[in-house]
Amino acid sequence: MDLGLKGKKAIICAGSKGLGRGCAEALAAAGVDLVLNARTASTLEETAEAIRAAHGVNVQTVACDITTEEGRAEVLAALPNPDILVNNAGGPPPGLWSDWEIEDFEKALHANMLTPIMLMKNTLPHMIDRGWGRIVNITSQSVKAPIPVLGLSNSARAGLTGYVAGTARQVAQHGVTINNLLPGIHATDRALALDGGVVKTEGITMDEAKARRQAAIPARRYGTSEEFGAACAFLCSVHAGFIVGQNILHDGGGVNATI
Ligand code: NAP
Image (cartoon, rainbow, N blue to C red; front, side, top):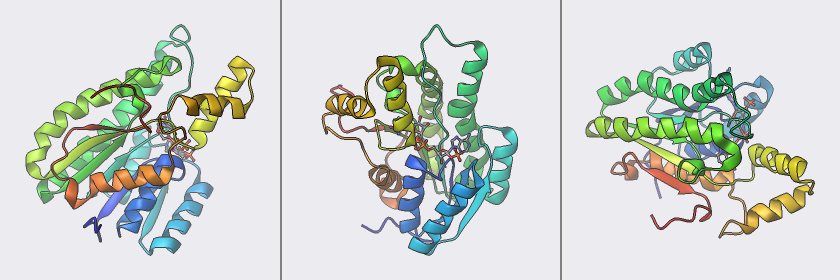
């Protein structure tokens, strides 16, 4: 399917690895030029070079922490008026409700709620003027079904979800869509880190931790970044203009809900 995106320009936050990279690759395959962000310059440049070589698109790198005001300003300076914005950042650490102080919540809120909100605030006016735009926020299945050890994620992402629900419906009349893509478990460094946490707390091996998690997923496997990226690229495509303000699970059936 031709996604109708050739020549468009996208900002991909936190995109040198994992799900963000999956989105970057899929958009680049559709002919989208990228401003690609992550903190570690070496990994970011390696990923950018691989994408340029594979897809022949322009990829500009901005190595910075997207959860800071300075970082966001650098990314926006590289591309103030993107056609497409993919919001992403690292997820908060696991723990228990009794562990966290106000500073922990502030960090999670900055990373997983306020950063995407501020990037939307800055890029929406250009999309509205142009009469076309696509925003995809990478959130989590924890928005639909809370994950006990990820209370910081449950909280911050719920705030973003509420903001998107209202804002998406205000900007849709201008040809701009905002949607959230909710990953379940995918085979990325983040999943390895979460499995590592289970290994530590429960005294089991990595293979056992993975097998246990897979058994709870109807698809009986972890998702891939490629599958996730393809879903993101479709939401950004010209075919998805009537999908507005949705929270789309990409979780192998992991969230056990009828709707
Ligand atoms: P990942 O494989 O660990 O990749 C994270 C990417 O984000 C890397 O490119 C990393 O590069 C970059 N990054 C992290 N913090 C950043 C920051 N402050 N500023 C700029 N770049 C940053 O993670 P992932 O699995 O793709 O997860 C992406 C998001 O989806 C996370 O919020 C995660 O919580 C959520 N999620 C993932 C899963 C899963 O199973 N994978 C499930 C549910 C939700 P640098 O470290 O070099 O900055």
